[in-house]
Amino acid sequence: MKFHLEAFDPSTKARAGRIETDHGTIQTPIFMPVGTAGSVKAVHQRELKDDVKAQIILGNTYHLYLRPGLDIIQKAGGLHGFNGWDRPILTDSGGYQVYSLAGTGRKINESGVAFKSHIDGSVHTFTPERVMDIQRVIGADIIMAFDECTPYPCDYGYARSSMEMTHRWLERCCVRFDSTDSVYTHRQALFPIVQGSVYKDLRRQSAETIASFEREGNAIGGLSVGEPAEIMYELTEDVCDILPKDKPRYLMGVGTPANLLECIALGVDMFDCVMPTRNARNGMIFTTEGTINIRNEKWKDDLSPIDKNLGGYVSTFYSKAYLRHLIRSDEMLGAQIASVHNLTFYLWLVGQAREQIVAGNFLSWKKGIEKKLMQRL
Ligand code: GUN
Image (cartoon, rainbow, N blue to C red):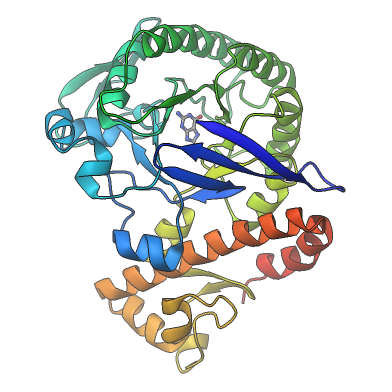
């Protein structure tokens, strides 16, 4: 994997770059649609490419390991072969899912985490070494270190010892990753994850430790877990200032359109979040004019396109009234149209941000669009 920086915004810390992987190039800043179980919910591959213009998608180690399991994925030639996505993939390590999904009965110690499957209650153990081996088999281009994502709020003592354990786990991840080869013909990169909850000193310490591993990119975890946005921004800025400039920075699980713009301005290059797809299924539609609850009476006879400014197929072809009808009737097509539209919007937003950074105009563009995006229509 190679990262090239192409432009810096003169008024913020925003940058535009490109990540080169064996499955193609990713232009940054980028948003990565979440494909938890090997599918971006309600969106098939051709729509992801042609309509959404996704450049990289996410998969989850936790889900794919539990179902369908590693044998079938390996037989298919990895996740790329299994789901047919031939562009870059990133897998999260399970460091978040074992806490959020397999919460009850979970046992964590220095060696790793024993957890119960949320599907059938069976008991499994993830160690840093095992998680590296699993991600080798899944075969994503970028894989994540095994970490503990602390909850919010979290007391200082727990946050510190958890962060220290995440650092020791990182050492074990690197040893295992560096002593094994890719199962397939393409190369993989391992990104470590900064933790430290909401404590500035811990965040700084974690960023310095993570940077010292000199991996090909770095991630920021444990944010957007319920803390106020201002705290998230302050910590993200601090951490970005410490992480190396010449490597991609990935802010995990973030966020709203406004969060993306704010964090791009702080020097973040990569984002993922379930928001555009999950909220789509509930009728929350992101548009260039603001956010819509399509279930509202207000849209009942609005036959105008979902978003005429966006240009994508579903966004200009289908009307708000029709989408409202589909979502209210629990028609599957409603979830499909809303998901494709919201993802098209997110990819449009980061694409615009990139263009504005290259043009040296990011800050004034951001100021202009931000107010609109935060509007509830
Ligand atoms: N996704 C969102 N936050 C996190 C985090 O802190 N760790 C991991 N592994 N994934 C995440």
